[in-house]
Amino acid sequence: MAHVTRSPRFLAYMSLFGVLAALRHPATALSAAPVTVQIIFWAIGFVVFSVAYSFWTVVVFRASMRLKRSTMSEALVMLIVTVQSCAVLVPVAFLLGIELDAGEIIRFALFCFLLFEVGAYVYIAWADRILFPEVYQSASPAPDRAPGLEIFFRGTDLPVSELETISARDNGIEVTGLGRSLFVDRRFGGAVAELPVDLGFKIHRSVWVSLKVATNVIREDRTLLVVLPDGRRLPVARSRQQEFENWLQLVAREKT
Image (tube, rainbow, N blue to C red; front, top):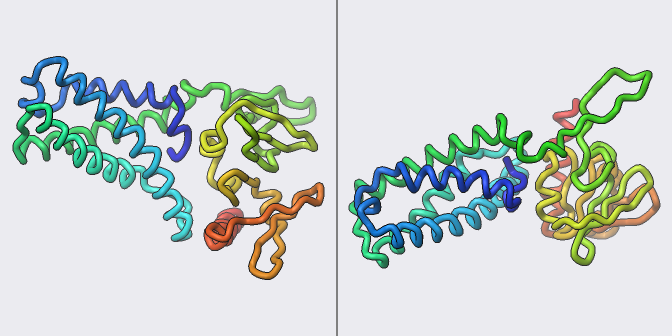
């Protein structure tokens, strides 16, 4: 689930489970607090969760790539986020006059971890298609081809399988593919996060390249360069070169 972590639709979905946590949590001292205090507590909790989840998803994903693993542990992300959120919220609770004993803190943390794990499972299994139906649009099949499902890059009519590069430009992104270049009013980080891991790689903080062009690599001195079909050369950031090479090897093994 390492995608759309900053999307308002995704955050709205996870906030539903935040409401469930606020209504059904096992911390009696928190339930006994005034409603205003509880609202402040959970508002802070939502902000902490949103920031921590986005950050740790990226960290765990990049660590998985460095370790040459094809998957990342969503449970590990949620565990880290739960621990960090509780580390912030427990002092907040005391500042708000809510005294939680050790047993309540443990039960509260375990409850939130299990609840949001259920939320993540439901999202992966069903909610993603409901929240982002445009990503799963079915293209009209050619007469000589069997019907199939074509996934388009959101905001364009380009199939994700035909993408070549995505670059940050001004207040949006430039997307290339099928010999075309399109400007899309979207954030670079969120747009790249929606794409499958094996489809491409972020070679720079503002440049993503697809696998079809990423394999055309040359080395000049200590710099890796991705050569595009139009002859342009995109340098791979020094900090990402080892991770990029590991990713190429990992994808190559999965394709064979």
